[in-house]
Image 1 (cartoon, rainbow, N blue to C red):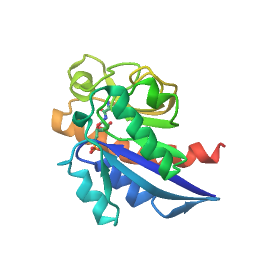
Image 2 (image 1 turned 180 degrees about the vertical axis):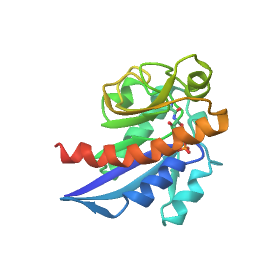
Image 3 (image 1 turned 180 degrees about the horizontal axis):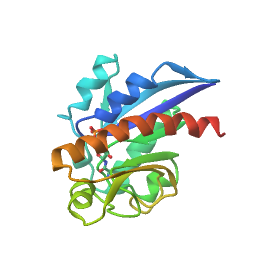
Image 4 (image 1 turned 45 degrees about the vertical axis):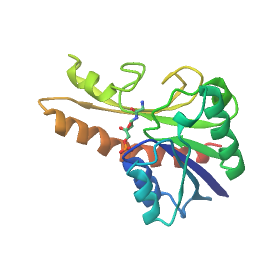
Length: 190
Ligand code: GAR
C-alpha cells in the first residue's frame, strides 16, 4: 500500500530531513511511504532548504496572516485534505492546534520529553534542569489537549552527567531513531 505523509514543521527541520532520508519513497513490508506535503508556518525556516534537497517544495502558511487560530487551522486542514495524506506528522510544529484541526486530521506529534511530564515549548530545558534521573522522548496521537493525546512510543535514557549540549544531542538522536520506526509500525498494526 502507498502511505502518504504530510509533515508539518516550524524551524530547523532535522526530523523532517530524517523522515525524508529514511522513509520517503522507501518500502517496509507491504507499505511504501511518500511525503506528499511539507508545511511550515515560518517562511525563513531552515527545514524548507532541507525539503528542497529532496525536490520537495514546502507550502508556507504563516499563522500571523490569519486573524484567529481557527482560521489558520482551517487553512491547514484544507491543505492537508487536498494532499490526501494518510497521516500527518508534527515535527517541531510550534503551534497550539484547535479542534478545527484535531477533529479533522489524523496526526501524531513528536515531543522531546517523557510525557506527561514537561509539556509545551521548553521541554528539553525543563527536563534537563529537573532533578529526574532519566529523560526521554515521546510520540503521541494529537488531540485537543496540548501534548496530551494517547502515547504511541517512548524512549528514555539516564541523564548521568551529560552537559546540556550533549543532552540535547541525545534527545535528537533518539528522535531520529524512534519516529521513523513508530510511523512504520502504525501502518503495520493496521
Ligand atoms: C524536536 O526536538 C521536537 O521534539 C520538538 O522540536 C524539535 C524540532 O527539531 N518539538 C516540540 O518541542 C513540540 N512541543 P527539528 O526542527 O530539528 O526537527
